[in-house]
Image (cartoon, rainbow, N blue to C red; front, side, top):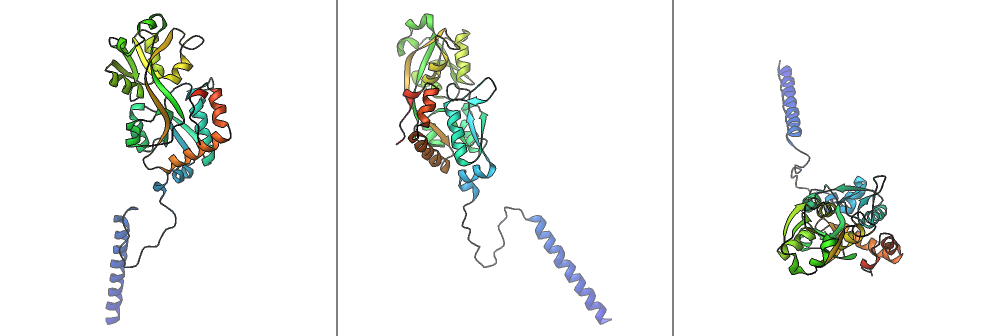
Length: 286
């Protein structure tokens, strides 16, 4: 009898311990800290994936580039493939990382949110290095210089050659862009649109008197022999630098800077700049 009682007690105790162990497994999570046993945790020689954007990008196999449609930097050819100076440069950097490149059209006004949420890995779209960018992201060294210019119909261009003459015009500007910042700084009346290409369309269709776009875009898309032969640019409102935007503290910034040096030294950057008509805008990478 005593032997049976001891056996039953042992079985009950074993069942209790088993249930306790199962209960601990179901209430814990992958992020829960391990119980403190008094022993030091094993050291790891590899940094956590989130500490290195380069490692994160290599692991997932893609470099996702946030863009808007902006010739001659990012635009689609007749086959729907993204081309342009920035698009081609992004492909070369992706090659150096050993990954594929993926272009993602974003709302430029939400660019920092897209970056922080890891929807995109970088912003590479003729991006002006502004206080907004340096405050909320990490910017590469400048690779090109640019200006914000006023675009109007050619037949009225003579009337709008000075900043003072612009006061009564209604402008279209890309939301969240350097053009919008220039309009605000100059105290101009404007409406925000999705991208610079749309801003040009607003002027061409007479739904806006003028727009503010990047000089590089104006050179590629307006005037004789272009998509908008009836448009021209007049006043330069600002001078600025282009860079690539990465997450704050990202090691991708340094990686791209190093690729700029390599691609400038071997002539690739100037070759692409000549191809897309922006050679005079390129900043030497020493």
